[in-house]
Length: 289
Image 1 (cartoon, rainbow, N blue to C red):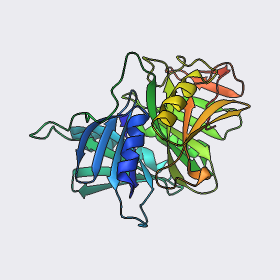
Image 2: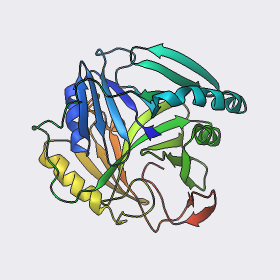
Image 3: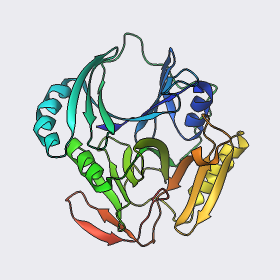
């Protein structure tokens, strides 16, 4: 399973440029649809008409093998009832998909990984910057805002994600997919999904470690982004450094900026979960929390 959000935008070219600058590699591009892979997770960009209801909207999608959808439907049907959620199967242009509609109205969609097309996907464009030597690993993160944080996190676990970090205050839980990518739940009055990113040192795939804890990786990314003309600002707050990048959908809106965080170490107030289900009081925190 891979976290692969879809972001719909009328600013497709500008989003493509930013997505690559943040570490993405374009693997497919055609007809208003762009797919990128990252060190952990993936991202799809889809054209939307300017001013349309879906312009600037992010959906949480989980990529699974196409032949696993029937088994998922059988497994999840009874389990979702305990969460007050329901399951829908839909036939779309790209094939079947499973939609999970949560009690708070949030939607998580299982998308099939389709068989390769007759022609290989588009390669990384020569116009895109080429990596030079070891580079930080970027993880795609979809953050869901909801007044029902723990309930939403429990549902994501039922869907197959694994808890990674939770705040002691109860306002933040993030989870990872075994195949890559992160999903998080953040306390909020309204239900919505926001696209964000996390970076760590080379080789990291969304687990603990590989960050320097003082924002060094973010300083490097900030320098690269500003050198290529992107509007980005480093914010040094009590819990660490974050990078906020102008959102191509609303470049002048400070509140709409894209969050990029670095794995932080030696900070209190968070608990780290292990693969065996045990948790430790930890000195870790994420910027978005």
